[in-house]
Image (tube, rainbow over all chains, first blue to last red; front, side, top):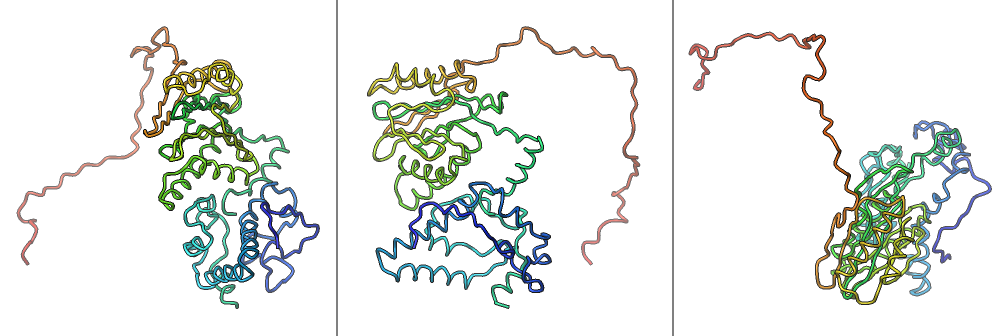
Amino acid sequence: MSLRLIPDNKQSSQVSSTAFGTPAEHAPGLQDILKTQEGPLNIASKVNNRHPLESRITNWEQTQYETRLETYRRVFGAGEPIRRTMELQLIEATDFKPSVLGGSDTMHKDILLNKDTSVNWEDIYKGEFESGNNVKDFHTELENKVGI
Amino acid sequence: MPGLGFDNYQRNQFLSAKGFGQPMATSTGTTIVGCKFKDGVVIAADTRATAGSIVADKNCEKLHQLAPKIWCAGAGTAADTEMVTQLIASNLELHALAQNRQPRVITALTMLKQHLFQYQGHLGAYLIVAGVDPTGAHLLSVQAHGSTDIGKYQSLGSGSLAAMAVLETNFKEDMTKEEAMKLCANAIESGIWNDLGSGSNVDLCVMEVGKDAELYRNYLTPNVRAEKARSYKFARGTTAVLRESVKNILDIEETVINFTSTADAMEVDA
């Protein structure tokens, strides 16, 4: 029920050891080292000494989205945000393309989020496999999607 | 992470602590001005880009096009002004196509200010945005943190005080186009001579209601390098050859193959 314009500046006082990576089935308290191929996590580096802008930018879109839904709820009733969230979830449930091949096409999502007539840094620097980032491998993704 | 990433922040902090300073981002130092005249607006900029105390570019372009009739002059970090301007120019074009209307200067301004506010001033882009649209001629400015100003004459950058002195003295309402161009050129020249961060030439852009925008690249060039007193070319034979040795990289072998004998003619019909 937030009407925030700017993301909250929350620095958590405690963090779970599985908060920064998917837990492994064989060691539920740790990140899955084999699947991510990134080695053991350094939780301190994920929590401390981060750029002041980082949390603001990563949470910006989500905050704006929540504020918009809250405004719709107040103006049009509780059904509006529920319907919009449902439509987005429909797309997420039906589209699938592996991240190693570029991720699924964002056309439907763009139209629903009113981003089809604008371009932002996320469309230029996509953070995908081609730019050298470590993305989830195909098997993990498909397992998550199908629910194995 | 997608978008502008913060992955190297901790590494850079560590390196700074160890004494390896961060590379200096090319800044535009700069003098930029904008001035309204009767039925139009003029913006002008100098052309020096500095990296610390070194001139990185003697003739850089600080006037960027956001739309055919909306131009902006950028001061601050050169990469930030360039990239932010291009991003907003793309967004403006998409918006104009979707709405089927000519883009407006206040649209460009709002897009810029919302984007810069999101990055809390870390994107060092100080811009003077000007143009003509169906509502008339406009002159506006944006600071890196997202605040905006409206005015009849503006100046930004390290040479803004020198330029503003000229503008304050000589500005009058409803000037002609030529008077406004002369005033802006004088203001930039004042910045070029009196500020170390500005120099080289003057670029100018005139946007008049009902006409196309006109860009005058290097409108004034008061800093042409003087011709050298002598020719410093050396005549052939100045240095004598002491010794010559040629080493063959490849061994070349020649064999001649004759294609003229009819016995080896190609069989066309089997």
